Each structure stands twice: as C-alpha cells, then as structure tokens.
Length: 95
Length: 484
Image (tube, rainbow over all chains, first blue to last red; front, side, top):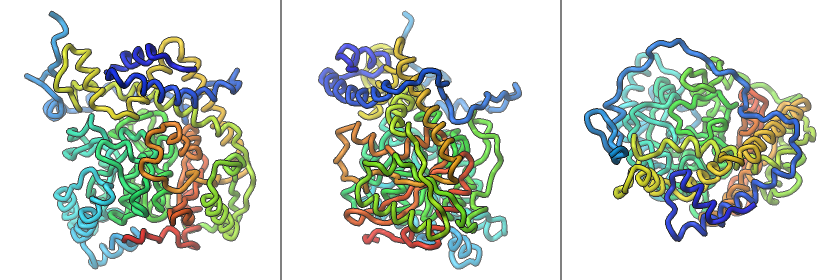
C-alpha cells in the first residue's frame, strides 16, 4: 500500500496539522516506509481471533456520584494561552 | 555517597553520617557539572530539592522516615509536577508549569524522596534514542557520541552518570528497558496497570506504563514498591494494594525455569550482544536455573501491530493539544481551524506528527477493520504465545536491544530502522507483561549490553529476585563510565 500526495494532505487536514508546501513529499515518503512495515501483518490469518483491546480484560469501574474535586479554575487557566473573565479566548467562530 | 546502594544511603541517613540536604547538594552539583555534556536534565529544581531535603531531614530526626526519605530522585519529564515545568520533551509544552502532581509524583513526595529535576526524553515518549527531544539529544555517559536509548533516555543517563541513584521512567514499547540496557543500569517496567497513569502525559494509553531505574534490582524494588498501587483516578489501574516487590530478593534460583524464545536467538542480534546474553544465561545455569527453549511465533508481528495501535491511540490522545487550554499557540493565524493547524504544526516535532498521521489514517473511515482491528487480533495472538510459553517456564530471558548504543544521528533520518531497535521489547507491552533489563557485560566499543527478563502477569517480585541473585554473583551493575 502507498499513500498518494492527496491522501497525505487529507489526513493532515483531519489531524489538524498544517503541512508546509515543501513538506508533503518528504512526509509521504516516510509514511509509506512505515506503512510498508505495517503491511507485514496482512499476511497473517486472523480469522476467528478475538481482538484484544487491553492487557487486562476488566470492566469499567463505577464511582459514587459525589463531588470529588474542588474549583481550581484560576490554577488551570494560568497555563492557558489566552483567557478573559474565566473564559478561554479563541478566534470568533460565529459572526 | 550518591554512588552507593539505596540501602547504604538510607543507613547513612539514619545514622546521621550524611544529611538529606548534603545528599541533595551532592546530586545537584553532579548534575550541574555534568549536564552540559550529557543533557540528561531539562529542568533542575535546586530550590525545590533543598526544601524537600530539609523536610526529609526533619522526618529523619523525628524517626518517621521510610526507605526513600531523603533519597535524591529524578522524574522523567512525562510526569506532571505541580509548580515545576513539565515539557514531555516537546515545544508544545515548553511553557507548561503543571497545576497538579501525577499520582507517582505524589506518592514519591509522600515517601520523602527528594526530586532534583526532570529528565530529558523523546518528545511525548515517541522514540528509541532521545534524539526526538525539543531540548536536544541526551548523550550516553559511556560515550557521548552515542545515544542513551529512549524514550526515557534522560532518566537512564542520569542514573548511569551517577547524578541520581534512582529515577522514574515510562515504557510503552521498550522505553525503560532499552535505555537501561544501553546505559548499563537496571530498569523495570511492571505489569500494565500496576503504576497509575494519572498525571503521566498519555502517548498510547493501553500500553503506557510507569516504572523504575536504579543501579541494581534491589534499588529498583525499593522505588517500584513506592510507585505502584491502586489509584481510582486511572480507569485501568489494577485493584491491588501496595506490594513489597523486594520480598523475594534473597530466594535462591535453584529450580528456576528460564525460557529462551527461539525466535529471539535466531537472527538479528549482533555478535557482541549475543556473546553477553549467552554468558549471562550460562551464569544463571551456574546459579541453579534450568533453561528450556520456548517459542513466540507471532513475536515478529509485534512491531507492525505496535505501529498501528500506538499511533492510533496517540492520534486520539494528542488531539487535546489545540492551543486553547494549555501549551503552544501559534503567534499568527486566521480562523479557529487555522489556529489549531498552525499551533499543532509548530508545537509538534517530526516524529510526533508522523505518528499522529499514521494513527489518523488507520482510524479513518474504511480502514479501521483492516488496520486497527487486525492489529488487535495480532495482539491477542502475541499474548497467547506468552501464555503458552509460561506453561513451560517461570521467566523468559533474551536480549533487550539487537545492538549496543548506536551513534547520534545514525538512525534519526530513517523511522523504520529506528523502530526495529525495539524488536525484542515491544511484544511485552502488547501483552501487558512485566519486563526488566539488567547489565550483562559489554560489547563493541566498551558499551553496555543488557539482558531482558520477562515475567508472567504480576511477576515483578520474581523478576527482581532473579536479577538480584545474578547481581549478587556478578559485578556488571557496579561498573561506571570511565569519565566518572
């Protein structure tokens, strides 16, 4: 399998990663090297094998619906690029 | 004093032969003297360390000290430390002063360990050489033209250079065992779920596991015992209480059955690594262990399966870095989408971007079954192989890395070659088993070679016992780089 340049640009868009104009070809070559490695797994017959999502097959725990955290908004927003009046600022999305 | 075993340091602290402040000062001056050469630390926390050491001395005086009280320690920069820069080796987090502590950090703080700083790492723990750090590569203390391994290369190099006696790390595909091997120290990755992932910046959540570095298995047992235990804030934390992983250290090895996977010994290992591994196995036989050939027929598929599962989980985990709540935001952008795309393009390095792209592709519509589900099926086959092998043996032994430390720059432009350096370690993460690396001699260029021991689920005490008995009869783990 190999990715076309358009496919590389498409997944970069899905991943919200700007691809500089000159970078697409180099990225394509390296990704295709990686997919070459990954393709080895297609040769194995895995019919009837149950997928393993996790090392331990545990059920998700439930916790009591009780308040466990305190309000630390100021501490958390201190590391944000831009805030105002307790809100995160981003470019306008609704005119 | 920093070069001594934890047991000896703790005894000296108890007997007032040294104070925690003196120890912290010794560690800090070693770091300040050596870091320009090794680049093991991203952050040195002199003030925090001296304050913690003072508190440790008070605890020692009050008689309420534990085995780690007053011991200098370094955290891999993947662990969030409240009030201290936490970068994960990335430009994305180069300004991130964490507002909270990782569970591991809280536990070790409560134990009285003295954090002296945060260690360098491959960006977001993606790499096998520490060359993917935004803060420049860490250098191997045995030869500064060589890599220390990765992704916990800073922690491994800091311990190898005797800057600190112990350090934390994380291991997603070999990131504790491989740098331990390449730097000539001992490192253990426990069973998946032993160590809480709370506050450990996520790479591949179903594989990421915290663990310990030290000069010896005995020291690793002390550190790991203080790191592990159930944490309700990590949804995959095992519901098991704290354990003394050093409880079996003194057990003789007579009757121990060591499995040798024929696939690990078939090809790929360089001659010098093979010679050291064979000699270590011969030593184990002398100590009363027996060996049996086992087979892991699907282990060769571990790398392809890993490079689907880990990037898939990474692409999801790293979507949180959007330049809104924390981390890097681009200076110039148009609309919101442009802000996301530019902030992420500027904040992430090349390897991180590649893995995000691979993960995005394998999870995208129409490819999910062919890649992600297929990789999870292979993961099952790999875990089944280990289960079958453990019917015939108590621990599995083999190489950690196919070669000794390679040169800085040697593989950095070829991702696939870099990935292959984890060929013996990745299967262990996919299965979720505990694994350990201990020094087993030297290879080409006088560089360290490690031996990997793999245990069954919850077999950490057995692994540490095995390595400790070896270390009682050999002195590889006491060797230090000539530059020290």
